[in-house]
Amino acid sequence: MIEIVVDPFPRDEAMRALWLKAWGDAGPASFAPVLERSLGHVGAYDGDRLVGFVNVAWDGGIHAFILDTCVDTDYRRQGIALKLVEAAQLAAMARGAQWLHVDFEPGLEGFYRKCGFGPTAAGLMRLG
Image (cartoon, rainbow, N blue to C red; front, side):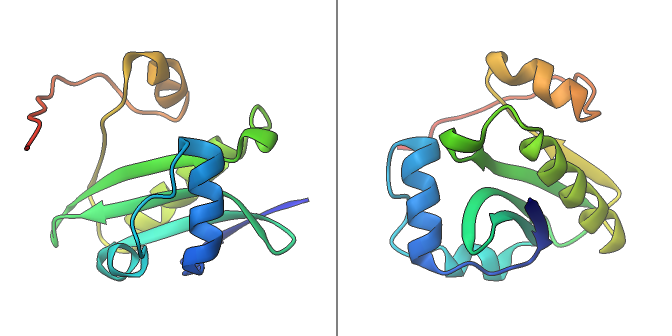
């Protein structure tokens, strides 16, 4: 049974293992500085194993941002990502956010629409 946990502050080793499975690289040297600055984050666990994650960044005010939604490739297509985003939404609301933003690649539009996000125009600039 998968357990959804708000603010679990997973160890770097657990995050790197998930990042490798989900993104194909190990991610940053340490995730702690990111998690410490976030409005919140949500982990999905199969026992002690981190199998999913989403970060909720924020502007310090009323805007929160979904980042890094990911699920271990062995656990996909089970509704885990939907549960992660739902828990992130509830946590953001409880912590005072009035808007929840997400940027995504075109192939993920169906998923994020299913999560309840509406369409909006946005821009993106690559720095460096």
